[in-house]
Image 1 (cartoon, one colour):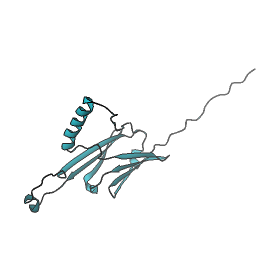
Image 2 (cartoon, rainbow, N blue to C red):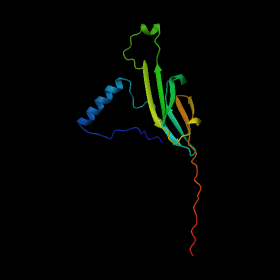
Image 3 (cartoon, rainbow, N blue to C red):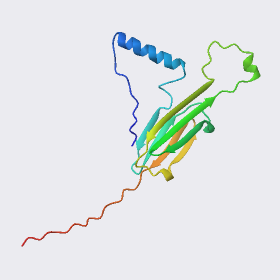
Length: 145
């Protein structure tokens, strides 16, 4: 479960680091951020608790979906423009539209019992584990003559 792990670049030196930084800056300008939807998953024994930071969103901006063994969290935020905004001159405007999506492998989860809540910018999911059925031991003891 939860096979998707964020990749962290190791420390690099020289021209390779410069190229890497250039690409990161390009994507940053298009609204992609490594800091969005930072998520913790804690094993609580009979269930997993997933907490994802989603500041500035409303409950209606967040959609959860199950597709096979994958749970997808998708957040879309669109700032509506008003007539007042049309008269303003922005030097920089980064809050107009953003969309984030993240998927998790939920094999071993009782999908019918997943619970979700959103409060103070934190999405919390309770993911109950499927009960593991114990196999009866039907072995036969061997006697020695």
